[in-house]
Length: 104
Image 1 (cartoon, rainbow, N blue to C red):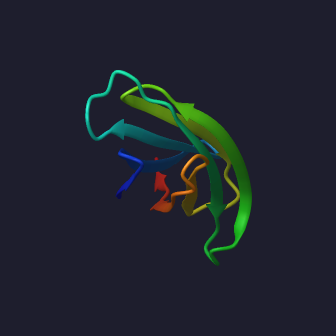
Image 2: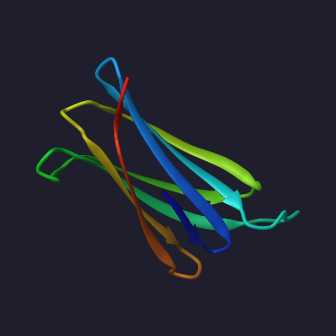
């Protein structure tokens, strides 16, 4: 899925390989900008079949490029989906992303 906040386009993907789940969040600027400085706080949750959170990670970052990737890895405890809460800590804008984990 594609989600937009603060003129940034977000896409989320996740796949499992050898007992690990690799999560990738891509950010792209809607318009080509020379100066970007968007402070974000991301809460990435790994969910099992019952939609229970089995693992969670918080990442704070500042987006400064027109295209960036934010990545993390979870050990696979039957993780079937990933949920991400994105907060722009400057404007307090918030969005939620989610995707299923692709089995490789």
